[in-house]
Image 1: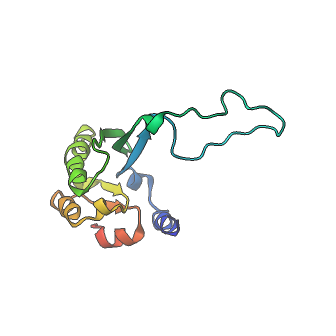
Image 2: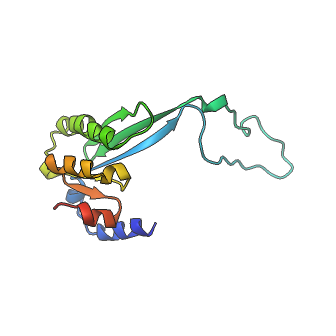
Image 3: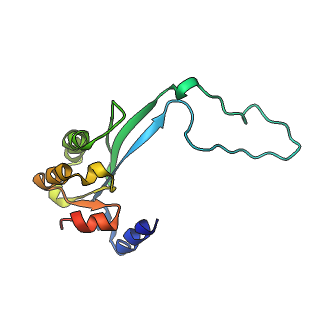
Length: 154
């Protein structure tokens, strides 16, 4: 949490125009049925359970989708499914080379005019990923100030 606060303070004076140059990205898991987290409901102590209170379940959770996506100041970017559910550095670089590249072309963005924001996941910090970003002249912003200090190319 402290790293996020430091990152926010470091960027608090950015102008709207500077923020418009950032392409944000992340991965997420979408459960087909239900949530992984806790579920709460409110009722008075003597009130009976209502039909919507108990959470219905499906054996083995009915599956999940792993997705990668990005968003720009101009609108949402393309998204892609991570089919085997696990993304390593090679899969991540393939996504950058296809899905991110398609987004950049769709919005007519130039790599040299935008910052690509991703977090400090190991596949984002992998040497092969850093090399891929360097070879494609992608300027990055990391969600962690320590990682940003190591990788930021301005």
